[in-house]
Image 1 (cartoon, rainbow, N blue to C red):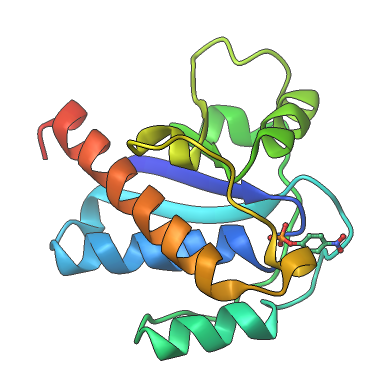
Image 2 (image 1 turned 30 degrees about the vertical axis):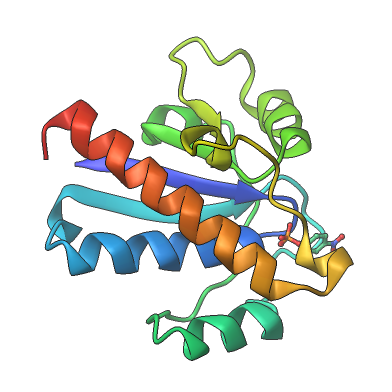
Length: 154
Ligand code: 4NP
């Protein structure tokens, strides 16, 4: 079982979008039993809250299933629990490392570092643009899944 934790600042816009997009991709490839996928925040700002309306709207538009997501903050113990801890932007990576300590097992990555054009995923909470966020997350999730399938021979 490959365990992935997607992480952003608030866990209401980008990381839950990545969680459900990735779940949808593995489901379509009949690989769901090989994965445990979750998401979390680096801040406690939105703890206990549901997904942002813009993220829910985008997932519905793309016919991607989601359940009753509740924002939570990443814990130090998550480092041992997950195989991949995937931030959306460089500042997430810095904040993840402040919480989990030194990444001794090389588990922490930025999502679009798996793509051909490494970059940050802009925060739609500030930009209001969930279209670009979705396209970037879709590209990143596809690239990450290809990487994992290749690495683990799935
Ligand atoms: P997210 O967006 O990190 O993609 O979930 C944000 C959500 C909430 C806040 C910032 C970013 N906030 O400051 O409350």
